[in-house]
Image 1 (cartoon, rainbow, N blue to C red):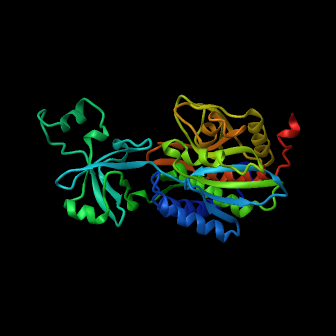
Image 2: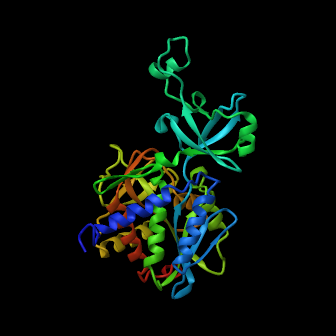
Image 3: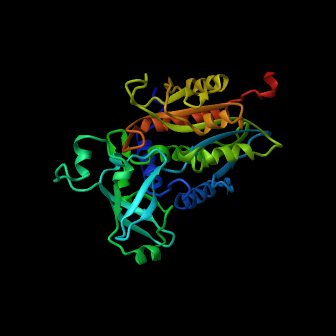
Length: 365
């Protein structure tokens, strides 16, 4: 194996194809049915026990040798987007953010409106450019940043048509599928919603590779992470009390920015701290050991303006040990760009970690 942890560049091709499949499954927070069906089917095809809990998490279990102990690896399956606030008399939708979405990131263009009865298309609109100071749109050009209050979705439908489609306040709106199609830049993948469809692809790869680990492993495609890690909190709070959940590792993107000592490329990033708190140092040491055994380079960082399933679950006391393994990403919560090698190397690290004979937490006391 090469120092970047990749055996064959065809692995990049397979990974790209899998991520593309997942990206094209709409899953705005709280309306994740499309990807749920795909994940349940693919985990079942791997001969894993799979179920969906009341919070919407899709969970697959890899049985271990010691079934009194367990770890969980999460990757959230929901994406950011928009939510209908109100519908104007002319059929225009007033929309607000769902998660950390900004209108200027998406730009004007086709969006999919996920009605209760039918998915229809609309155009995210900001108004004309050829205007004078008398127009509200002029301020967007010269004075103020574009806000959701300044944007709307054109449907060219009547109110009765929208009602028939099941469009209402609360309806989710996301980037149109044809705009989501990932693009290949050499060994990089560029796409909307790499956060966190690429991490879900890592979960599926682990489900395929990891067999008979020392302890039970729960692969959790978590729900509603972008609106407060709702799925992860529910999972950890309601975990089987007859079994010790010794640690939770969250898979995530990691923002590339000048303020952080993180480089773009094939080396994943292990976080020590984020906005919600400090990650477990002993668990991080175990992950660093796994990376060393897998001969995979690993970057270390502290970041802000960020939280994960693991840090939020730790903050609320639902899990004692949490970590976040991530891949460096440009344009986070936008048209994201990440090295396929970093995503693949997360698989290598965690596949190795899952097979380590880690002493039980109780035995350390």
